[in-house]
Image (cartoon, rainbow, N blue to C red; front, side, top):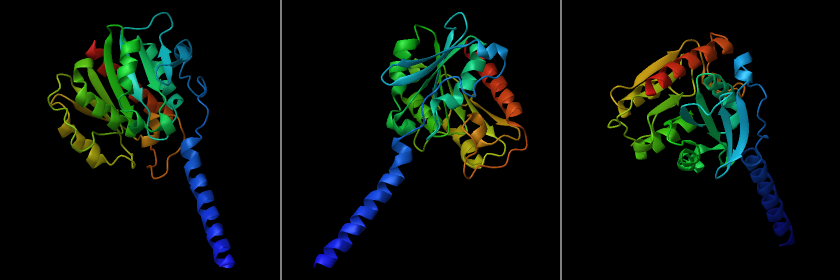
Length: 250
């Protein structure tokens, strides 16, 4: 019996150690440090960046001399830190857009898909509001938009599509869906198919040669495709498509 107890104890300890090791990447996330690997050009360096507390930490990127005339609430991809999208917020600041990127528990937007409620209440101040997201964050942004369309003027999906059962076909605003040409994480068929769940005026834009991980600066992603364009070129195309879309929302 003593040997059996020892054996069981070893098994329990081993399983506990495995569980802790498995859970560690979800619980202990990298530091949220603004300004690292986020500058696109001299103008983007002048954007004002702060870490705010609005029901949790939020990375806020504002134009140099104002808050801008449009608010973009951006949900990060699964297990991706908010600062991975700071480059985009800085680029949009040059166009009079304030971008707010919330931090989620374990970096999973599914744990707080209604975070936009508090962010809109805190930051919008009567301005036009657009919600968007990358990958899992995009799916959660679509979920939010389907239930709170009255608060929004647009939806941007980046390598993402609405989950099954989400219906945005009746929204008064057009959505923008961006897909990397070589994205192997978000299946092209699913992204294209997701258009059927958006308003009829919505559009799909393909980013030539781009991959799933080019929407954020977080490094290569397992299972992703091989890019046939450099990151800087892909980012410039993403900026152009987003700026054009936001311009139509004003």
